[in-house]
Length: 206
Figure 1 (spheres, rainbow, N blue to C red):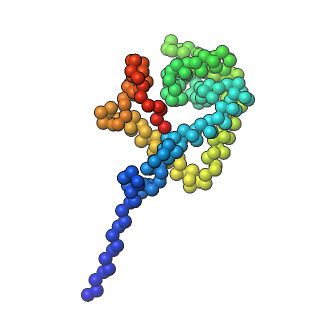
Figure 2 (cartoon, one colour; figure 1 turned 180 degrees about the vertical axis):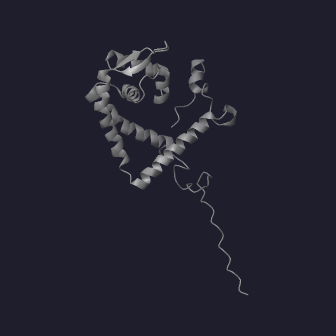
Figure 3 (cartoon, one colour; figure 1 turned 90 degrees about the horizontal axis):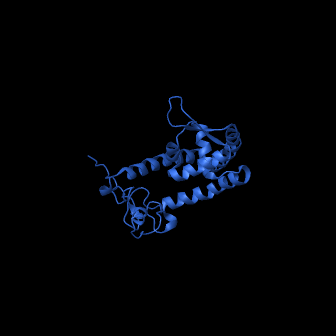
């Protein structure tokens, strides 16, 4: 009776110079050895370069800052938002959002409208604010679309899924208890230490 030939042993995933292993271990993003390999640094560089396009568009053509545009954009999407919710949407602290809101109010683009039940006043675009959004949104959309269409459909779908997965993983890391993760709690860190008079350590993470 003939015997079946034995199967070759499965190859193990290659290891990176730093010891990591896995299907992407050979990719510098999975095993960074220099600043330019860091995933967050790459994302920041992309956001900075593309963000400058939006900044120039906002400031030179429409007389508002990019931060103010963020407020206008979200109020067009969700009229009546509170400043605290806007801060969450924009990933900014309340003080910066408040300054942007104040500037937009001075420019006649945003107004506060009290709620019928007497609750805190919500933020709304004025007629001028709505016109600005109608003019600026297609231009900002075009910049984003131009970047997206530099990828073919397959890579664009993969990017969409990858961004969602990265966002989910970052949220998981942020939620981990301080003792279970190599990250300082949100209330601690160098900035909190500096406020207490301690010397800050290191620069911002990439």
